[in-house]
Length: 315
Length: 93
Image (cartoon, rainbow over all chains, first blue to last red; front, top):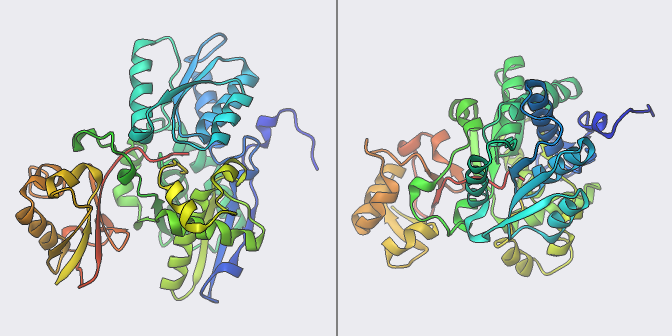
């Protein structure tokens, strides 16, 4: 093993592992990129590091500046870790209905948590962060949904790593949150091979949000629009909580202990494998399962866990 | 042909509080037309000024977004499930 100067140097270069034992089609390989191996524990380390370093380079972020972001967990955790190392005070607007471990992990890194109503979901947290950022123009607000450094981190990191490790990729399947992973990796892979198919997977988030008063309060991330997501993607799918949990469990059969969003992505990869004749699917395992143990996802009755998951933001 | 339409919380009050309704049509466009005919109040959430679907509304046939399968011309068959969801900020982990 090499020796490193900083934990931040450990971000990226995550392993790609064959999980084809779960493929329903013997002619389709499924490769999973284990982003939980990042030091902050999730794929979000990449965007967080890129957004901080870009802001430092541009002079928008320096000693004493407070950082504010909205997050349902992983971006907040990644930013909190980096801010602690760099000495920036960090505040995060966090929906109340995230797993308790996400909140605890934020506390590990000394983040100040500003709660937002669970009924408003990530949308509500984002709007509150935007309002706070307007009130405090001296703070740095990375705004992951609209920051070009987010997809860029994947265009320059995750995408090339996949191409290096698996140039035979025919399908790339990832979750759609900020759209950073899909826009960055997707653009990179399509430039190398225009035939690569991009599948975006999401939870039925809009069903959970009942704080939405009017459809005009809806939201499409600027990262998605600016990245030409309507053109770039080939398929976009929702995966429901029950199937997400089933596949989170199935992943343990190949030794992958992953968060629930990774189960949703795996469920979609299996649907994809059943639909195509042959190919190589690359999926993202966004984070490890540690932060979801309290949900009982692996151990409790599946019906009970499914009902619970409908009220918890797990993407 | 009759399909099941799943409605999001925000549209249920316009459909008598129901979360799932039946609608007729052989394409997504026809199903949306039938839904609006049965429950005119859903129109404000669904329709864009140009007659298409509002930009903050996503429509899925059997879990797949119709923007990538032929939009309103996407065919449906009896027993399919059409899911309507508002576009919101995703979990974004």
